Length: 311
Image 1 (cartoon, one colour):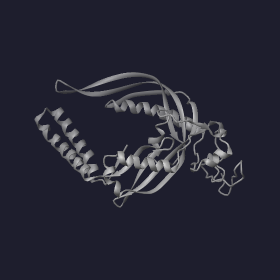
Image 2: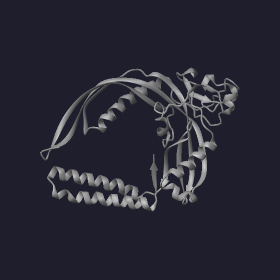
Image 3: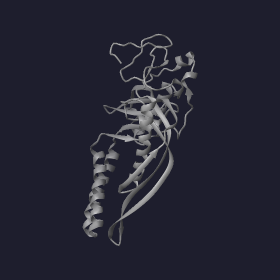
Image 4: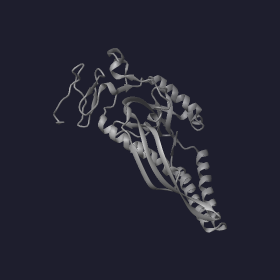
């Protein structure tokens, strides 16, 4: 795409905000989606209608009231800014078949024993993939992971009339990944997700083979995401909401004195646990040292931080 090349909206003729990586550009004037390049069809694009700004602010204050820490600081909290946008997300189902060999270490008769397991899998995996090469990660993953679990109503973009387009006030981020790229990445992610599952239940993967199918029901969904920025104690924090139901998904919050005390006790508990290692056999004693160190690092890191993440 030449730097000087100008693209115009197919509906109203207005100039489009296209970059060299843009696949679909949304017109700033009439909101119409225009295919700029790549393999993608307007028929594959769906939209989840969003609630309005006032509903998000109302949900924010309700979330503050429900939060154990924030409700104690409500008088110190001030809404600084509210931003909403539609994030394009490719969604598809992939059938994965394969085999995995993994191992676990177990303590038997005071000895550390390695056990090997073999498992065959054949299942469908739902993958959600942001269609932008760069996207603000905080909160986005938390919202899009609700698709398929908390399934909101979706409408085909081509079925929305001009009057309905006028009611959509949120900016729609441009799509930078076409159907071909999305299909490849979704297949890879499906295999990776199965591997991550076995990594989480084992101490190591010895062999892994995965054969993914082409994605089924592949579509591009425009997902509404809202972020409320709020001030508290001279710092700014964030709270992210899914746009269709105004539910909080993730937030950054100030660390209270009570919570700092809890973190301190947790860190000290980890040190105390490690100190008992000499009273046990070597293998179990080493395990206690490692466990104590991890506990101390976990709580110690939160102790020195002024921000915590609440999901």
